[in-house]
Amino acid sequence: MELTRGGFTLSAKAEWPDKGMTVIAGPSGAGKTSFLRAILGLERAAGQVEFAGKLLQDAEHFVPVHQRRMAWVSQHDDVFSHLSVAQNLAFAARFAAPGGPALADMAERFGLTPYLAQNAGALSGGQKQRLILARALMSNPRLLALDEPFGALDAEARHGLLDLLQAYCAAQDLPILFVSHDFDTLTRLADFMLYMEEGRVIAQAPLNPCLLDKSLPYRYREEACVVMDALVQGYDAEHGLNQLSIGRVPMVVPGAALPVGGTVRLRLRGGDISLSRTRHEDSSVLNILSALVITVEHANGQSALAPGSVNVTLALNGDPVLVRITEKSARALGLDAGDTVYAQIKASALVSG
Amino acid sequence: MSADLAAPLWLSLRLAGTTTIILLVLCVPLGWVLARTKGRWRPVAEAFLTLPLVLPPTVLGFYLLLLLGPKGPFAPLHLVFSFGGLVVGSVVFSLPFVLRPIQSAFEAIPDSLLDSAASLGAGPWHRFAQLAVPMARRGIISAAILGFSHTLGEFGVVLMIGGNIAGKTRVLSVAIFDAVERLDYTTAHMLSFGLLGFSFAVLLLLSLLNTRRAVL
Image (cartoon, rainbow over all chains, first blue to last red; front, side, top):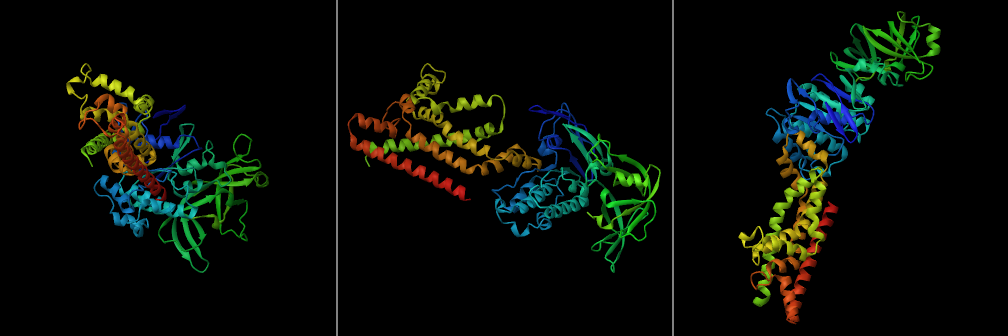
């Protein structure tokens, strides 16, 4: 699609899965919001939009935003302040396609039940955010479009709300399109990613390939990581350790017991993995795995990799994992592609999301 | 109260009431359209609709007289020297006073709020009737009060179009002028003081309304 607004041209072409969470990321001013608004029909871009096999716009047709069933949550406080909390929810329900959620259930889920009769303008910032999300879901949309809506919330409140949202959308099979430049949100929740720069989508792929892509900034960040889904096998109550597996690779993670049989997302930070040629049984690190070195990338002044740093890619259960070590260590180990090494993965570095 | 006082007062109130209702019907949709369009013609439309604010009432009255008069395009309507003519003149004359506050109230509603509502499935009519109008209600009330009191006080346009026919076009302000001409200062005093008191009461009401908004 093409869109010009005051000297800025959006010229984007992208395809993404119609389930799970797709994050639109990129630097400020890359056109993420404009792109999202064009998909929803809030901006009239030239070009074609298709959703779930249905044509929403092309040269001749344009389905207006209120008929697209794509609920938008903006960066602003968009509660209808002249209405009560219940009336805000009922407003969305009025236009919802049949089979939408019940108002009382939605209010309960988002902790709004005690405030239903209250004027929406009098809510606190966090309560307003919950109301706006609940209202968006009340409209029974086919797509939930979020434009960095949680900027005003602290990390804990944001995580709580996002987890709530993701659980609901996964259960309802409702895809989410999420504009965000928050790395934490991205790695916690994204399944797929569109990366934009200067009005163009320069990468579109599942999350891990983007995190490892040499043309994107993520693999060069200090907190560079990949994510992996792990199955919860059991819990060692004596040591407070969750026993997980990534494919056939066992992994232990300390902390409160996770539901056995469930799947959790683990974030493997490159800086929390160390490498050695021999197996160090006396190490404080609990997860020691043998792995194959796929690539070794040295800092060369051209990439954004900090001088003195090396990015090593390993294969773990067949999937690439990024390890960040120093140039000095890489030389001492004599690392090269094709080598077999031992990776010590600090169990405490694995977070469940 | 003598018929001398009652007739102009009643005529003025009737004129102001009719004018206000017509202006609200016109300006609520017009203000909405102006507030929501970013077209190139918008400044032109705004300048044109604000003209009555700056033009001398006699200029307006003169052109209206030409339009409505026996040789004008609207001659068959027989509006000159009638109540209908007064209403037309007052509507034109008071339009900016009603349009401006309504337009500002609509402009104060954030775009993102209306876009959100659209994405929830609310079409243009619902966004206007169920969100914009209730959210702009204080601006609309202010506009109605301003339009009403402004129409009560008009003089030049009324005199040009309506003349000075007792019981038909002799409104309060014209009656005051008439009384002064006749050196009947008692009548002039009573009418003037009444208008003064009324205008003050209206402005006080407006101000109280605005204070309450700030508190809310």
